[in-house]
Image 1 (tube, helix red, strand yellow):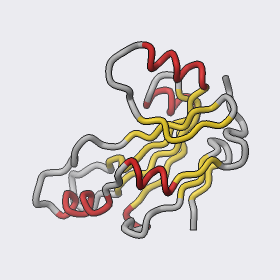
Image 2: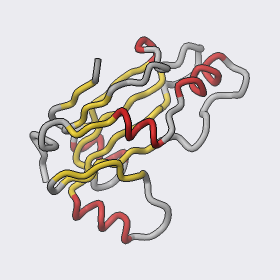
Image 3: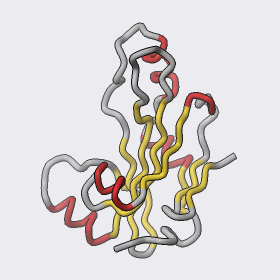
Length: 140
């Protein structure tokens, strides 16, 4: 069953390799998405739910929504992009950010499970769809 955020305009079908009880889904609204990546207006974060004491939940993938103009300005700043564009509709660009490495110590239960649940950019593209015509309550 897909996870839908009408506010962000995101539909995401979690892959079979994800254990639903090990994933925490958080909607990132204007201020929180902007904290994650300056200029984003919406987003959804899919985080691995750590099992071991002392381990924090860590992102498996974040899908952020940018106004097309802000995304273009972000790319023009130079340097590596903060994510990869996976779709666009109207004035909106959808960007996926993936972890660059496993945040847990090798050989731990959380490290093994995180590796098992890791997604490639292609897997994110396959699981993602724009919901409706994009963000429904966007604040520009």
